[in-house]
Length: 423
Image 1: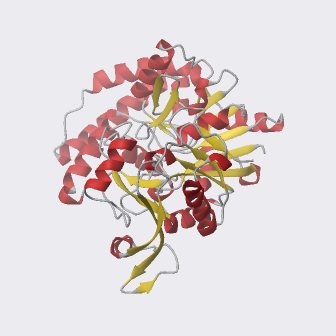
Image 2 (image 1 turned 90 degrees about the vertical axis):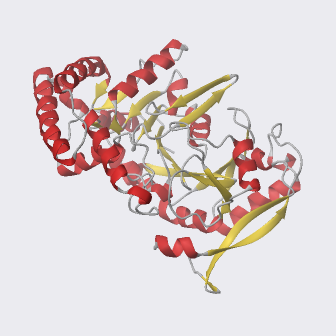
């Protein structure tokens, strides 16, 4: 299987990094294909916990080349804070490659992000204010600056200065903060010099690897229902986390992709605003948040908890052509008397045939639940499907029956080896 895509099937925070880390040992390249430093991937190795924002999760294997693909928007200060943090803990980033086609984030993008979110008042989208959306907007407007531009330092300096002066005029008209243009230019010229050794033609690197028969893993950030086209718009991210985005965000062609792994938590969470049919408000939701440590890796914000939603998961399977599902964080439900799973939606007493394309309608649906008996015992030591409690196996089987996609991996704890892998 030359190319594997790993994609989130909910609203993010499904535990993608754990599964990517698990799969990376059998791959030669792990490439991130979209998003920016608004995404947080957490990898637990023994007593060490690593929070990644831009560096791909395969960095922990010496044989893996981690790639930041052309579909990513890169904040250079964050990238080097992350690299320095990893290097200080003995994790080498020397193999890291940054696509020459990846667009860069600048301080004016973050200023625009804050102004835009503030203007929405009570209708805030819930953006992380990292400048991701404005950077993608500049990309679409064809005025962005790309990582490859650092190859010509004089031209890069002029590009940054020209863009900063232009954006200062725009921010002035909107009542935004004053940019210190000279400081920005100097800082990014220095960052440009530092990132230059990492900048590469990653599209050809990927295809050369495939020509040699090497295994490639494409890593998505965020998740299906934050996709700018297929998510709960406007409460979405500014890129395409779905499997289709893996092609445009990496340069790999669709016929090279043979395995698409959808990651789903055994329950559901989302951060920020937007409809959430199975949301749990109150003591039960707080219990899931506390046990699952459901706070954002990047923002620290409390995640909104809810039961597993198989209507969502079926739709994600369709959108991504999932070949398999990795069900994570099963252990968080260990001590629940009853585990509920949404198996359908109703509106005004009528069953919906599928996931609605209207966010307002989604906010009005009544979830129909299957209630499963809890297993009331820890699963963290379990390594085979047969050894899972029968009640936990019933949950997995319910997922497979409703979604029509096999569950091949089951996360039973945060660490690398705490996983059930089914052949």
